[in-house]
Image (cartoon, rainbow, N blue to C red; front, side, top):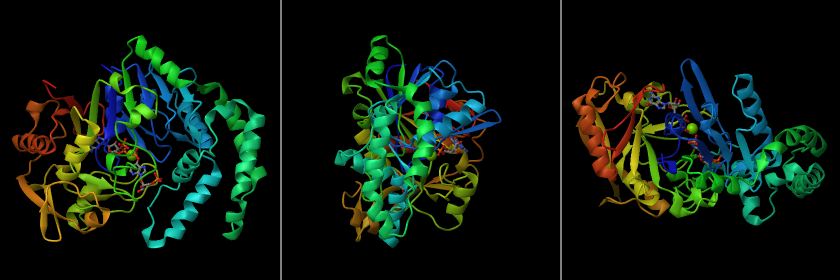
Length: 424
Ligand code: GDP
Ligand code: IMO
Ligand code: MG
């Protein structure tokens, strides 16, 4: 498998973790390129269920190498917990996981700042995961962040941490928050020492692996509509979740990327605030949430649910340069009499077939639906020919509307509930 970037085409939680896990049967290296532990990627292997936040989903296949790229913001305490929990479940981590020295670190003060910022925004709050992602990326862009390379030098790290924490004390005091720097450092110090051996120039490693012709998968987090540039700003995350982020977030040159897989659910979900044209708040939405088990992997929040949005997804296919789609959670639509697809938006009485670039217009958009017949069951299908004709017709129509062919179909959370579409 040539160097492949896998990204989410909607608002996250498309099933990227599951598809990465399936694809890593053939990949030798998996690289995360953006985000932080706001991500929650679920992989089910037999009776076991894993929720990965910072560690690439490739870690669950023995023999793969896993890199955390420079584009991430990494909470050392969270990463250490994740490693410890995986090790306790028999997953070998040492010598298989490397952390870019250029990745930025997320510290507890970033989480406090995240909470304060949300509280200040009141009813305009973003609905963040409160993992400190925005404040950590803000420090990076302000050129005042602390990078993972400092984990290798505890004396320098402590000085940086204390200076940085001190710079926020005035804000914390004004908000009546006690931030105990000594206590926080006492938690961080041993963790920094444990992580230090994993810190590396992952860009150099990546280029060696490319020269050795290894098959490399780039694992996106979040989804296209949460991208800080292209998403439903300001209701987005603070990184580039689109395929271009793989270049800046790892150091792979654009001309070394051979394939882009876009992951899309057969319907739509969103967690957190912001416009969501296809949102269904009544019985159908409740049914999608219940059957699809649509509760956040990271925060446990109920996800907002709706029909498939072909307007938003076509735009996402375009900006990511998607070569093939992995359609997931088709089984969640099993048993509906009819399924709806949003093919256009109506904004102020005008029908639009392209995603509005003005967030205020987007907030006023109403969905225009096309109806298709439903089907009984897809969950036991293990090939395209085993899908009910109505489900095939539905997927064909989605592909036609969004402008990319189906390459992979997923009809359940298990590894074997996945198949490739022939000819892709
Ligand atoms: P990610 O963030 O994109 O990796 O997605 P999440 O793991 O947050 O959410 C996807 C959820 O759907 C997880 O609980 C998966 O186990 C589950 N899942 C993935 N593919 C399928 C599928 O085809 N059918 C069903 N029913 N569940 C799926
Ligand atoms: P995965 O990788 C779904 C959402 C939050 C919020 C917004 C900003 O599992 O698909 P942040 O904490 O990043 O500042 O929050 O982005 N969000 C996600 N939604 N899946 C995710 O990750 C998400 N990561 C962040 O809910 O609306
Ligand atoms: Mg998720």
